[in-house]
Length: 91
Image (tube, rainbow, N blue to C red; front, side, top):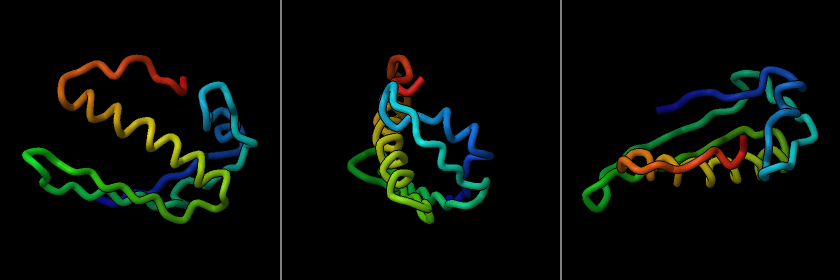
C-alpha cells in the first residue's frame, strides 16, 4: 500500500510533537509531499509490517517522523492482538 502524507500548513506543523512535550519548529510539508509505503508479509504465524517514509524534506522532520513511527507501530501490535496500548504518549 502506498499513500502520501503532509501537514497542511505551518500552524498544523507547530502542533506536532516529536518527543512528548516537545513541539517542532513548525516545518510544514504540503499535503501529498511525502510518500509512505507499507508492505504486509507473512512472518512466524503473524504479519510483518514494513514501513518506509520517503521524501521528508529535512533532518528534523525525518527524525521526528522516525520517533512517531517507532512509537505508534508497537502500539498497533498491542491493539491488533486485542490489548490496550494505553494513552497516546504524544497527545
